[in-house]
Image (tube, rainbow, N blue to C red):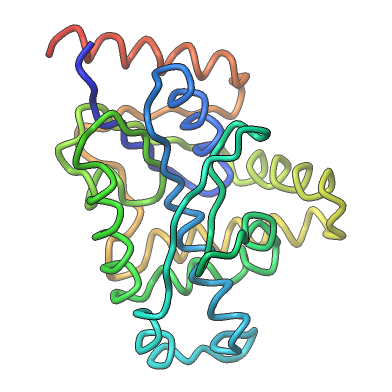
Length: 230
């Protein structure tokens, strides 16, 4: 089969990364978690005091973008690539609720998006890639052969995220997570630069009541249908 680009967009906590990892492993494709890239930049800004609950120094962050180096390294024990920020593994640090609270604000910054989109497009130049995020099918790879848009109710997504954080030992409340999900939805869909929208040729999947296996099988069938026509 011809290698293709699979673009997976959608709201936060819809399981985009889980699905993308499953597909990449099954197809032997490269997986790129663009959300991790934005989280890493957010973590960078938090560590240097550029952003807090009541403060965001956009200009200093923009001026410091050249000092940010991001790359993924495959971890055979985990079965997926982890995020490295300036040669330091930050996979665990970027998955906290604190980073989640700020990532959409950082992702609003046009200069941040431009820097990361350029890197993402370079990663997909040889195709055979699965990439998930907010603007993959609309901005990063508008000509992707297969575009998926994932959605689920805010309450369903908040419960999934809450369970995930609880399993990691994080002390959070469901109400806090639901508020974070709703705030990120608003920011993601209302930002001026590359807002979260469904591409005209994307296939929408509401996975509120789908198991991971059901979802994977449904999308794998779509992949096979697309590759048959190439």
